[in-house]
Length: 223
Image 1 (cartoon, rainbow, N blue to C red):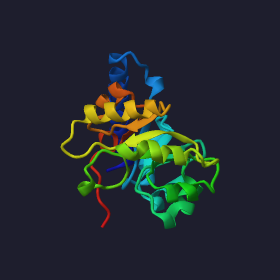
Image 2 (image 1 turned 120 degrees about the vertical axis):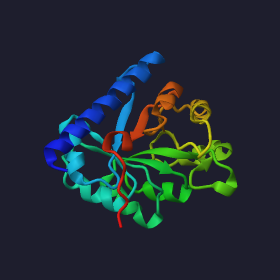
Image 3 (image 1 turned 120 degrees about the horizontal axis):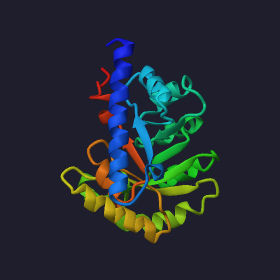
């Protein structure tokens, strides 16, 4: 696809998502300014991120350290980079060198290591899955204890909670429950909602939505 056609495609999709975000916010008495749109560029070239930057986007999400490290060197410093993949202990130093916000803290051991890198912001990832299907995240019934330990780390400013609804679940129910739990802990920032369910997330109180395919199209998995 030539560059001008790709620019037109991304501009159109981005405009649609922005319109849907605004409509979803308005329907529950919120404003678009309350919600940070994070464009997830995982498996897409940096040229797409550059086009989206020129279209006004400043928040980009990556699930892999190597992609984030590479793209962050090319885009301007005014970009806020969000790491939202599963954290591996050996990658923490590298992630801290390029990411501004980490959305997937679910280990106190990892939290303690990230505490060595001041200046980053963090979300605690919550798991709403049965133990047998656990794929990362702090089980919601263990969240209060986890949070009470995480906030003792001087350089770990916990911003809020992140969640991905389990397959087959009702996203609205998941988002509402996680937001309610977060508010019990005094948190009011919630990273929840992706291409297929960000409208429900906004209704439940999401402050950060992570949208990839609705803007960039279907991802091509690297060989």
